[in-house]
Length: 195
Image (cartoon, rainbow, N blue to C red; front, side):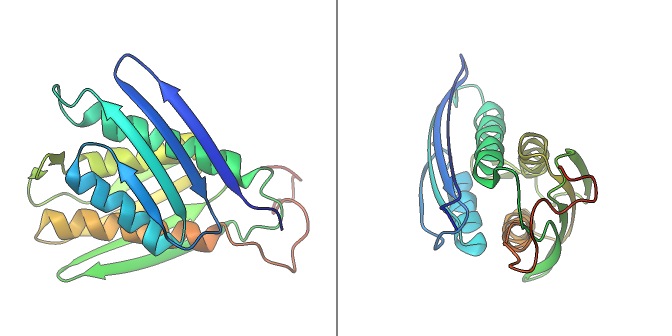
């Protein structure tokens, strides 16, 4: 199997981003977004999904974290889409539930080519360092829209750090499962013949 890698560059008036994603990696991350907690989440996403991930983002953090988190998610979604190609032979569907102390997050993913996003939960604190907690929800939505995924996320807990980290970990583990190649399958995993 050829290496499934996507490289995307995005330049706007708000952010400048370079991203390289290798789906069949070892969990290595080299990430710099200027937001410490977000860097930690992206590194955790790579580690638990066994993706190799490089992200360099220069964003308008003097305003807030919104553009940086959203645009990184957009670029990462596009990198997933590029790396997956025609999605030939992939498992396609997966679900996971991941705890972190009192918090529990779950993800259900369909690598469908039809982007949809659903979220159920709330965050116990509004901010984690320089990261707005609700941006975790928006990250998942932006990633789904640009990778062509149907994603359902849920979270419960009492500590926003735990809630957000559990979300990133469960999304990573679920995407790892869904993007695996099943040697029994040939072609695109759809009766339509395309995703």
